Length: 112
Image (cartoon, rainbow, N blue to C red; front, side, top):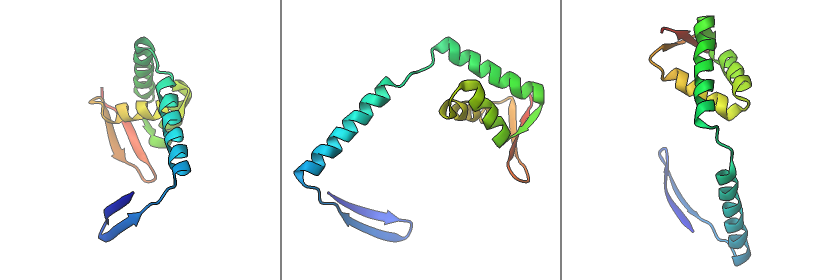
């Protein structure tokens, strides 16, 4: 396999050589990863809506929170770091939330 391109201004010309056993292990790892991703639990629509409403209510009641504290609260609320990050991104893009640069971290303010 040959990879050519640029990283920034640096040219890249990389050749990867794998024997048949290495290709088989790579294919096995990729197919196992695809199966695990397909089996990952997805929150039912009603539960996701309740989480979103609760996340909005949290920020509405506090008025404002710094990003790291809000993320920690959302992760605890949602039960996983990934779900907490998704809620934080939704808040960041919500018309009812204004995100400002704070001294150390972004500050999320409820505008609704």
